[in-house]
Image (tube, rainbow, N blue to C red):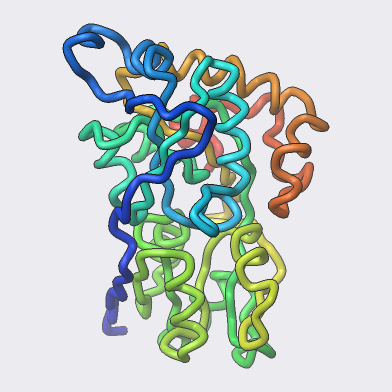
Amino acid sequence: MTKRTTRIGVATAAVGTLTLGLLAGCSAGGDAETEGMSTLEKAQESGSITLAIASEQPYSWVEDGEPTGATIAMHEQIFKSLGIDDIKIEEVDWNSLIPGLNAGRWDVISAGMSILPERCEEAAFSDPEIMYTTTLVVPAGNPKDLSDLDSIAAAGGDVTLAVQSGAIEEGYAADLGIANTVQVDSAQAGIEIVQSGRADAFALTAVSMNWMTEDLDDVETTEAFVQEIDGIEQIGAGSTVFRQEDTELLEAYNEELAKITGDEAAYLDLVEPFGFTAENLPPADLTTEQLCSGELG
């Protein structure tokens, strides 16, 4: 089979900084007064921290000029508990999230990013926050009767699959030998390429695609599934991302996060308005170390 991979780009470069919160303090960036301070100390001193998002609903996006979403809700509460009331938001494309973090363009990634071994080599992940399953966005009526990525692999070149560049589903497709793929730069672009007929399906997390397609008549989602690779279920869990050297900020964040994930009612109070359920709450015995090592598949 001839490999046919193309890329569809969308205008998702940084479009500016939005401010959320009560304070209008300066950013957590360095100056003479904060030289030698950790990122946490700078943020607490200024009362401000900058988060990067990839505008994927219902995790984090901007609506009517205001940031919103499940991860934004968690971060508002956590950072306020740490004495940081002003949250600035940068909207960027997915593949810029970790490089921009390490370049110091923002302090934290708020995108529900899946914890994967290769990503753990580049950045530090908080304790698990959200469990994932996968779905396919397909044309209304599901004319090719697709159910999961295995059904696409079985169809060979007769099905064109759209994947978000850098997302875990792109890796799944490669592992399954799905060659007829189209890369997109955002969840919205993935939906639109199916709507236009340039792809037969788009694979991404179920909660996101169910939320974003709820009011659309020309596409639908398949039943959510946990993808298997070589007979091993791929456990998907996402969390907040920090620079590897920001251990103080990460530890402080995890302490506050545990108060939320350790209390199902508190967790649902923050994320249920955005379509998440108790099924998305990570089990207490699931650790970032396990996911970073690849022990769970």
